[in-house]
View (cartoon, rainbow over the protein chains, first blue to last red):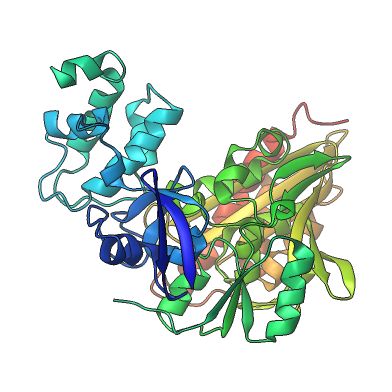
Length: 161
Length: 291
């Protein structure tokens, strides 16, 4: 069936099978491979993207369920070639090693900061508790998100400099 | 790669439209709410519905609101919505307690209250919480609307009284004065299904218990409740001895089985201990809540 949705601000129409999962739609049909496909059981959280502004595990959403809605993936974080403070934070604080969980972590982090610009460490850990990282022990991910919180707004010039 | 079997996809905008679609598509059609129980089962081919009726666009099924003396929770209200609800936090601590330990924040963004109840997993948390609160489930179908006490809603593991072309529209929880409630869960790791969990709701007047609700999950308690422990509590002044007795009664009023989450005797022990803990918190929460 034909679906029309907005992906990272761009309207897209495609023909898909109803059983196609959203994670495979963005990766295989749209070529947006920044969203990773991990456990396939809504546990690991590497497939997290935004559906109508809310983070969801896209291995447990059908592509057809996104018809008429908006999707934002990790590719939609940067603006005009400038990294989002969350992306910059992961760079500054070494928030990744293998990078597999990173896209999902960043999408959750952006959503958290949009709703709670100055989260405590506990709030950050709660927000990412549905996502698994096997490299960092989470310590640097938490630091990266704190970095983004401290460098949002004023920091954007700094990042650009 | 897990791929569901092929199915027909339809989307409803209203409850009536959803019912009409279910009637037209027949008994092998299923409603698709948050999809966080159904889609994993379809991916494992444990479920192979011929058609799905997506009800995510049905606005009338959403929301958590106060209406008269009831809190009304729409079937499509997400777990995250129930957890964030000020009305729920004020009146039914047990629901916020339970939501905090259901899955994880991202799954809670998607999973729905109605979907959780209709999945009827014998380890589901809200089934126990609503059983403790003696909630009512509203069901609509081609013949009209009916209300079913939540303790008559589940007829067995993964089975409910909801008919083929029927849809759960709402859960209603009556607000009665003097209520305190709490939910206690033991899980192997954060976000897991419970090894055992117990919810308690207590109503007090003049220092004695006028009504009690105990919801148990994952331990094979009939209708997710323990009538024996409830009867013990009613009409009594709460003491440590009474709470102990109620815990003992609850631990005997269930039928846990040994599985990967633990041996049966451990779960029975938990049923007793979590009943005591939930009761202590619920009773202390009634202070200042009496009419």
